[in-house]
Length: 129
Image (cartoon, rainbow, N blue to C red):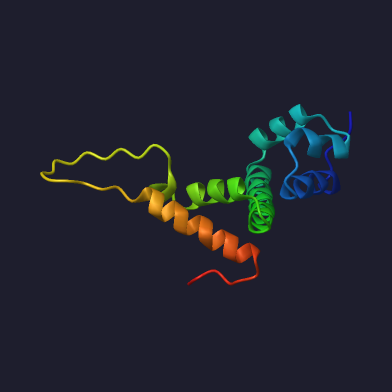
């Protein structure tokens, strides 16, 4: 069994911070993922560092997702918007209101404008502020 030196633990945390899974990060150090989970439960500093590394990894994934979305992935852009502004972009909007008269929902107008802005972006025009 490999001893978990500071160097090995730091390598593991570095891999997590690069958006690697726990299993993949553990493999790069030659130590079982179970050993790291046990260490996390026993060592509060390591547990805090683990959480920080996971958050860095998620940040790296988000940066890559934004880069790809801006290069033309409409679907990825939609997911990013839903995550960033769920109150505005989520699919499961529940509206309950009593009204009299006619009500017109304009979500399709908003989506159409967003699609037009994306097309303009692809054609080299800046997005409106």
